[in-house]
Image (cartoon, rainbow, N blue to C red; front, side):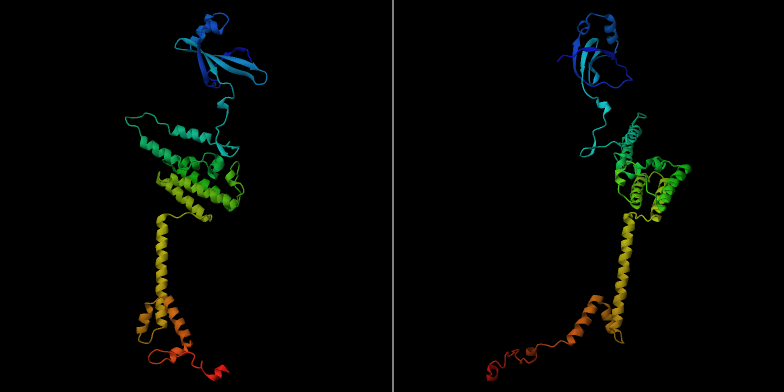
Length: 342
């Protein structure tokens, strides 16, 4: 099949990017036109690009070739025919057959701009830049639907943007506290959070939604809490709000160890008190037996009392009672009697 190609248009920089070239063939002005023209040749040699297209009945105009100049020579470049890759979304999948459409594109663009290194001195702050990048991306979901925090970013602003600052003013702190107070007020009223496109909140009760929100917000604020004392005060304020809201927060390792030591000490005091009480119960007037019994545990004392009580009622084996001095016991004494045979 043969297609008739036509002169297209001049490519301009503000238009959409062209498809990539699959082949480049050197040519002459005569081979690309019926007659030699200095106007077209000089136009291409000046650095311009002229497109060649084909008109299809169903798909319309498609650009197939481009006339370009490289090092003073003319080339015909063959362009890929098909849908432009610049018009398609990134091929990231959230599951089998489900395309993700809520990418955090603006946030990624802002991250790239903030992480751009510029020459400003004799040394490049590579370590500082790496630390900044790790800190910023420590809590960084790919899309808005996988995070309650960023799905409600419009409601949580300016808290999210202020926490990334190195220094917070009094006005910034007041705005952040106002955001926390607003969320807490909605929680006390049992108002459901606007889910929007957040798939993570689907099927959750309002209490579960706020529980997930407080947990994500606590993790986000903790990431930047080391910037200054103002950041630490906001983290403390957030933890106070979550405690009043009934949300169980994870304790630090040191506080958990301290509470464990306190509980062990209390158990030791209780065991000592029970042991002393057991010694008083089984002790005599002089207190000698009380001192001995006080060294026993409560389990040993109860086992001893139980054994003595039941052993007093127990009937020993009759043969052991009637055995002779040599330790022999005669069994079945009346086995050979005639009375037993009858």
